[in-house]
Image (cartoon, rainbow, N blue to C red; front, side, top):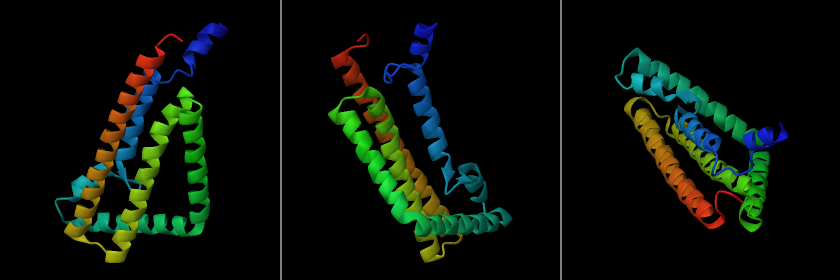
Length: 171
């Protein structure tokens, strides 16, 4: 019984199907939203009309919410983020803990996406983006998010391949 439980929650992340399912779900969830709004709503509003006016209002409210949260908690966010990434980096690459390596390959790009979303919110409010300009900002953000996702999925797969090649599946 304990052996079965040990296999179900194995710390060998890169050889686990569950880890790769989690990577796929993570990236689907991470790139499916812009400032907390569904990208499907953004793409529907691309045709113009009333939906675009509603999108502008919702986007400005979401951007203001991001900015307010950032202004209120910026020191805490930066301190916790830096401590988390530094700790994970040490555990992952100095001590060679595979679970920390796997989590690092999810946490690092997520922090990058959070920074991109904060920058997007700042730009939307600073330029009072409306209409086509707002849609272009959101589309560019989506392209950047996908590029980060593709890059880190490739890096994760390459790292996992070499990790399993060097240390083997059965250790």
